[in-house]
Structures are given as structure tokens and as C-alpha cells.
Image (cartoon, rainbow, N blue to C red; front, side):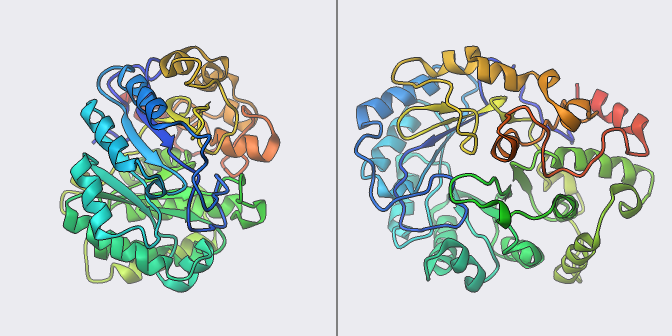
Length: 399
């Protein structure tokens, strides 16, 4: 299995992922919402005809088609969402939809999404229980609506990704959250790391040392389920380091600077997996990290057509109403600078893992105001890993 997956085409030419914010309307009021969602759909958003034009621009990026994700807000708050899913699917795009856990998340609406051509959906579950989840989403009942939607998605034949955002509110619940994902089943557990933008607050972050603990916990958990990280790009570094240590038969604790939080999460994982073993062929289960980052295989389009490197990085490179998406992605100075890892500053610029990590550009910008600054929630010191030759061999093996 490839440790760090790389698309078979040049990411400078076209993205692997295109995420479109169909609306900012949503009936939740989540603590971390980057969109600062509102109750009703904005009438100044891209119209149906303009949205279809955007979809054609995505199709014109070329083949293989990028994965096209319709997000929000809550896409189900947009009345024409089923027609838009059908139009995108008819253009040959692989379509996924990211609805919210509200009363709109019904079996009937999920079947309509499937019938319109959606291949997958993603649902956000931020805790193993209603108390923590509903407090985070700030709407009582959201946990139950989401869990019922989870089950209905399976029944409808939709592939399913579960999103969980790590904050101080659910850090210690992660082993139980893993157990929930494993018991109910999902194609992927996508673990998001908070970016303090929109409603997201810096005080809701966890310390950099706990980032390291969570990333190593996720590596352990990946032996049982498919998972990936969002805005946690240093997970790719951890995968290489842990692979090198395992090849030498060495434990991670003395070499990875792991704290008591990791010991707690590791013990929790051992408890919820007690009596079970990882799959006999873990390579068939584990999801290798994909080498994408802001503007580097990834592009986000707002409800008004503004093009951003990431939904968490509010720097516009243009608007699809005026300039084709492909031109913005390939030629924007902002996008080009983000793809050039030699421009990274601080520890990210010095790091031997920069070619596969690069840190969260969104978090760097949110914390420092400099999109090229070092990742502020990474505790790794460049060059400090004990087995540099092993890492170099692993890096060379992926090229």
C-alpha cells in the first residue's frame, strides 16, 4: 500500500477535490462553523443557471474528474439541490453531498439524493453521545437526527463518510467516537482539526502536544477502520514516522514526544477494541493519506462564486462569474505560491516533511495573518526524528 497517495496527474493542472458551498443556510448553530450559517438561503448566491455554469467549469477541468462535494450550510436548505445534483451527475462528475443533522435529514431526502446521482454523503458527528454533540451543534436532537440519517444512508445504498471536528469539548471522547463509527459502519472517518475562523474560537483549540497525541491515536485507530484527516496535514508525517518505527520494532512514545493524552487515548482504544484484532489484511482497510493541501489539489467555491484555496482560508483568488475556474486554479498567484513549498516559512520551511505535509495554511493564516507562516499547532522540530535515513527512503519510495 502506498503510504501517501498521490493522484496520477499533475495537481498544478487540476484539483483532486472541488468543494462548493451551495448555501450558508442551516438550522444548526455550531460552535465551530466557518460559514457562520444563517437560517435562510441568501438570494444573492449563484442562481440555478449560474450554478450549472460552475458545474460545467468543474467538468472542463478534465479527466479523471475531480470529486465534487456539495456542502453548506446545509445543502438540503436549497430547494434546487436535487436538480443540481442531477445536473452535476449528468455531466459525469462523481458527486457527494454534505447535509446537516436536522429534521431535513430524512430517508426520503436521502433516497432523492441517491436517485439524483449522488454517490456518497458525509455527516458530522462530534461525539459518541447526544450530550456532547448537541451542546457542540447547539440544537437539541441533532445527534439523534444524524444517527438516524446515518442508518438511512446505509439503507439507501449511499457511501458514507463521518466527519468529526476535534476540539477541547470532545478530545477525551475520541475512543468512544471511534467505537461508534466502527459499530455503525462508514466508508471513512474524516477527523477535522479546528481552524479558528468563523465561529471557531482559538480557546476551543487543543494544545500542539495534544495534536500530536491525537494524530498518533488516529494512526493506531487506522488499523481497524478507514480514516483521514482534514486540516491535520501533519498526520502524513506521523504515518511515515510510525511506519519507520514499526519496521524497527520500536514503540512510538520515546521517539514521538507523546504526552499523557496519548496514553489516555491509547488506553481508551485498547478498551473499545478488547477481544478483537485488526483485519488480517489491514492494507485493505486502511486509507492512506492523500497528498492534497490548500490550492494543491484542493479548491473551494463559495455560494457567491468566489474561489478560495480552502473553505477555512478566506483569501479569494477570483470569482467564477468572471473568470473560469480552471484559469483561477492554474494561474492565480495565491494558488501558485501555496503550491510552492519552498516559500513556506519558519519550521514548515525547514522541515524534511514539507513535501508531503506543508502544515495547515488555513490555520497559519487564522493565527498569524500570514498564509505561508509555519503551522502553529505542530510540535515537531525539523530534523529531530531519530531515523532520518529511514524517512528519506520512505519519501523516495513514493516518487
